[in-house]
Amino acid sequence: MTAPAFCALAALIALTALGAAFVLWHRTRRTLLRLNRMLEDAIRGEFREEAFNEGLLSALEAKFAHFISAASVSALSLREERDKIKRLIADISHQTKTPLANLLLYTQLLDEQGAMTEALEAQVRKLQSLIDALVKISRLEAGMLVLHPEAGSVREVLEKAAAQFRPRAEEKGLALSLGAADAEAVFDPKWTEEAVCCLIDNAVKYTPSGRVTVSARAYELFTRIDVEDTGPGIPEEELGKVFQRFYRGAGASQAEGVGVGLCLARQIAEGQGGYVKVSSKPGHGARFSLFLPR
Image (tube, rainbow, N blue to C red; front, side, top):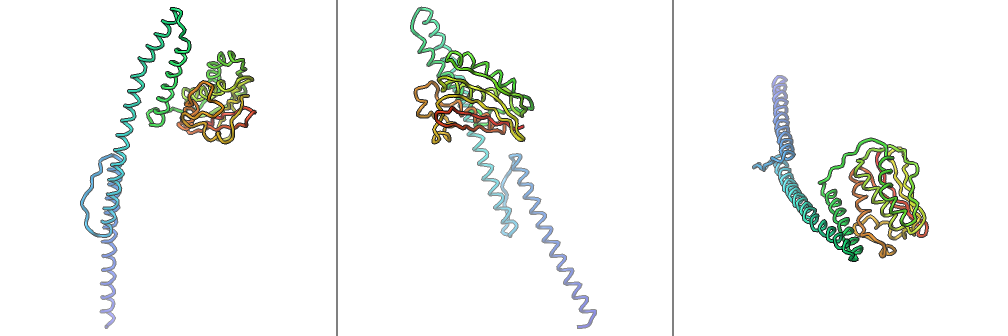
């Protein structure tokens, strides 16, 4: 083969290779663009499956399309289930308000006539508190309630929470005090107060004598709110269960309460990027800590 013929053949091969590379690049780019469009359509909730040929890239498109289609169906089913939960919670909340209000009214009217209604009224209020707590927990779990954390001092929240339970503590002969509380955090004031109230309520319920102390301390990443008591303490085997819904330890079976307050506190903490923990030893009280991001 002469030199000119060899050069011409080499040029032809090079051009053919370049052409094949261009075709492959073009097909790959087209496939990637279609995959990108599929994702964008899925994000907008507008994805529709299409027909594809049997090529390797098209097979990838087909599998990707099937995956997105299944994910879309799953997301739609999840939204439908969440809507059902929302409606159920709203119905429970609405339908129980009037009967509970009427029961409280009837007990007050009976009390005016000299009837013994203290026990009845206590049970009605207990039921009302239980339903309110369950509705709040369910709404938080279902994502129906959105917390709005903002930077600020936790002192005012702790003062308000402690003030609500001081009369009940004094009735039991407990000293409810507020310790160091000048700490900053990023939190939702309303819901954080609710969580702290749950912790204080728990401490006052299960502390027969002594004191309950509320305080806050700032660390590098978190601010820790502590509610400490001088109660009987919690056995080690129960420490991992106390935040479960309706859980009540063996030593708490005779005390008031239904076991939802600590669960609600945990949901509120997690809803704003925090968490709760407990440390305790039998006979040495308990310390419940709410950690909030700074």
